[in-house]
Length: 176
Length: 264
Image 1 (tube, rainbow over the protein chains, first blue to last red):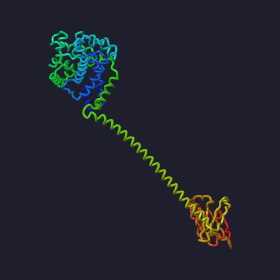
Image 2: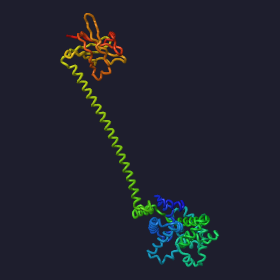
Image 3: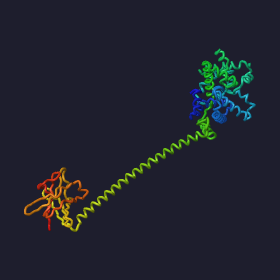
Image 4: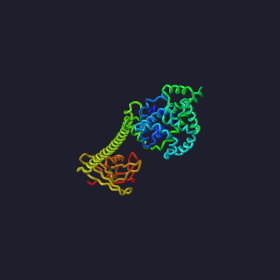
């Protein structure tokens, strides 16, 4: 099912729409949240809040705001970051980037959907280290280009194109 | 132009949600008017969805249930209908379902009750019919009994003859109102197309039979086998023969069932 089809179900007030929404995106959002919090229980709590928030505010989404996935990605990232701040992690927030999604793939034995994950893990490890970092910062953490350039000590003007190249590598690996 | 636009890396930032509102709108416009741009966006999105999916730890179904529960409890109906009339819809559906079951049950009960009433009615009709039958029977019996019991009766017993030795009949001569009754309860049912015919006999100076009635056997049940026949004064004996339907002008003696003499 595509995002458009899902939205159609939601607009039609289809009673299964919530379940469809959850089935389609819960794992990805959980991955994003977990990548930030590194705590399964906390991540579950946040995911719960995120889906309640998405559903409550679903009327306020429209396509001019961007992709639907982008909209819910933002909600998930912001909720996870808020959680970190509320726990007094704000100081360490920026430093967490050392522990990125590749580390999760490496160390998390309870990664879901093991066959897929093992496959992806092997593939993703083929990404250049700089790409792992740049995708981690921009996609998983929602850093601005400015913040990323500072963090990575690369020129601001190259962040966008470097990221582009990294995503192209990822797509080649994932065959997307 | 498109390639340059795509290669700029702005679409990645669009999917990541890192653009301003204004930039978002521009990308959206480009995507709407350009299939390549749109396809590129979908591919980028697919890649990051897959990537984030792959780093997700095991997510138990319990989490889903908790969220659902929370949505139902705190925002009644939200799960079912996020837009408008949030409270009403869920409860409404629930109410509708309950009502439907209620109606169904009521209808079932109504049907049951109707069936019962119908059955009771049939039963009652049956009993009423039985009662009517019994009353009628009773009336007929009383009538028959009254005829037989009359103190003014002179009873003539007719004994079975050669063709029907077991048969018997009785004739009641009522001297008061000059009526003659025949009781043929002791005669077998006549064959089809045959009837019993009653004869009054004069024995002297010679045997002289006179028909006093052809008995319609279909009346036998109703009148308890007691038939009123024509009066005949001075009969000395009575006989009953089996005759073709409609009766005969003179008795068929080979078919003489019963015969009895009047005792005076």
